[in-house]
Amino acid sequence: MAVRIWLVLGVAAAIGGGALLSLTEGPTVVGRDLSGLSGDVARGAYVARLSGCIACHTDPRTGGAVLAGGAAIPTAFGRFYAPNITPHPSDGIGSWSLADFSLALTAGVDPDGGHYYPTFPYAFYTRLTDQDVADLWAAVRSVPAVAGGPPDHELRFRFGWTRGIGLWKQLYFEPGPLPVAGERTDLWERGRYLAEAAAHCGACHTPRGLLGGRDADRKFAGGIGPDNEKTPPIIPDALLRAGWTADDLRYALRSGLTPSGDSLGGSMAEVIRHGTRYWSDEDITALVEYLWKPDGRR
Image (cartoon, one colour):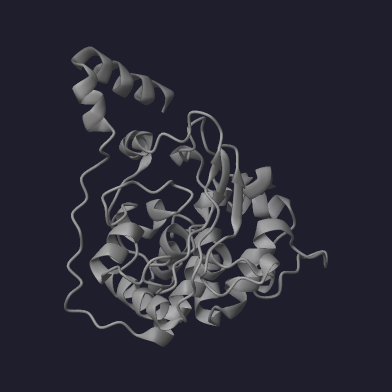
């Protein structure tokens, strides 16, 4: 990946500033046509639990309203603050259309064409189905509109250049649905969709490079989460060495308890508190099936 970074920058430098400007536009993403879909609020609320929307966009420490934003996300690049995504017309996303919402989720682009920082996990949400996007939109629009917004991001020097996100996308962002996996069970396919799209497990559990791009060759091999938190590998061999079974993992995702009886802490506790403890038994089983048998053939 380092070779790829320098190759892209070298070509841009050789061609000239215009090429660099073009690269910072980011990859071309065609907006989805969701006009024929009707969103379901109840199902969308469940998709929000699958996708971690409530955990990131609600700040319980300050008594913040649901989805009103403000929760801090400390990273190596600075401190980010999740935005208000209630239907407030100016402070939230009340002026947005379904097309705006879809483009933000699946391409990381705001209604004015600007790039969102990849702390917003659109690199995973780009794989959401059209129906999940429509249902999530219906759910978001159903919550009370709340005035107010989060603080400005507090970024380290040189990471505040938003056009640089377009270049980051050229290097690391692959828009579109999950590639076809071949003959697999429906349970495995559902688990893959949860891990690789909605639940974005790799956002924390995959190592990242200097620029924050995930190391595709070490998927789920452990990484760094918010606030420099070390996250463990969740590949089968590592889980087995740590004394986990598939049943242990299913139980932990529901209860927050490890095989030894300890409580999972840090960001994983938040994932369970706001997310997986609300999941259906079928979805928890599907996620474990995929994590335990990543190739679908074991």
